[in-house]
Image (cartoon, rainbow, N blue to C red):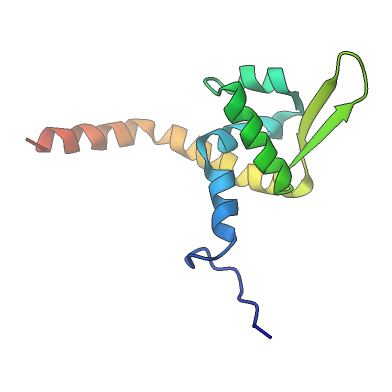
Length: 123
């Protein structure tokens, strides 16, 4: 019987890598941060997350739902209504990536300055 290895994101075969990829993709970070505020319908979420295509939003939501971070609530009404919200685990990860996104926003001037210095030093 093989021994189960503890999760280690540095191991190439660790399933945590796929999860990390799901929650740190550009669209997932923005979707998770938005869902921290409240639940959204698909079209509302697409408008809120500027620049995301319908296809990418659908794929992102599906991956986050599969991983247990997002709850999809389809109501049997006409027209159909589907709401997306965070699960408890989704709330935990959303708080983490939201903090990262806010930190990145706060560092834009410093990063742009570093980029300008780097670019100026290159021929």
